[in-house]
Length: 272
Ligand SMILES: C[S@@+](CC[C@H](N)C(=O)[O-])C[C@H]1O[C@@H](n2cnc3c(N)ncnc32)[C@H](O)[C@@H]1O
Image 1 (tube, rainbow, N blue to C red):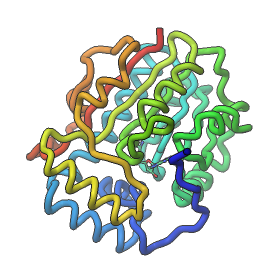
Image 2: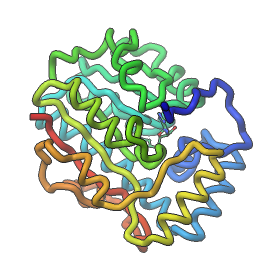
Image 3: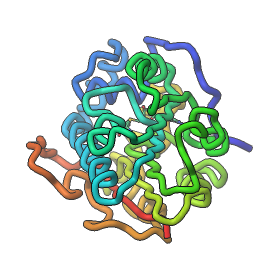
Image 4: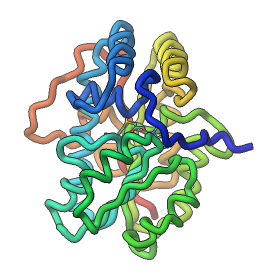
């Protein structure tokens, strides 16, 4: 049986969402009191979360720039793209080459509304509402087909998103990764990271807390070994799978996590 949640078209201010909580941590304005209250609650157990979020976003920027500059990729499919913020994927990639195409995918209706407003004039970028587990629907979506040529290498991003979906043989992260990889030509890139913790109490507290506040739109805080498994069979780029603030750091000053109850862990693999 499929574990994919039905897509909501309604924005409910009273039920926190991962997208809006993350927006709050990044200093954005597209969030409500319920999202901010949930973040405050979370901070009591995992106080480094704001810094973790900022570092995660900086990693995404560095990674996209590297993929475009060093690996020459000109098409990106971004799963769980989040609310628009500064330096979104298309802006970073199009700075390297304005002809780059980007498709954003998210299941949160608010992402769709804000994303479409931002992209009104942009013919080379689209945002679609879909569940990241619906690979066929995403790959066959008219906007994806218009913008992405799967006979050429593409960068597929799953940045800080797999903790939002539970394990499942058919729709868990590993199943999704395998399904997506089969559709990519050699030279394509898969970027993946998620929230992990060595501490079983943190894993279980945050998993239960987020599941409760988001009313079931959550998966699991995992361990590094779970993430390692997704990369099997890919050629992993240097420096390997790491806490993402240490992935090819640049000159941008990043606030370091003061404590490490949980970290964002992952990296980039190339399809052989
Ligand atoms: C922590 S944010 C990450 C945003 C962005 N990828 C980044 O790293 O800056 C997680 C995003 O995944 C989205 N998301 C969660 N579950 C999803 C699902 N099943 N399908 C598509 N998007 C999902 C959320 O709406 C949210 O925007």
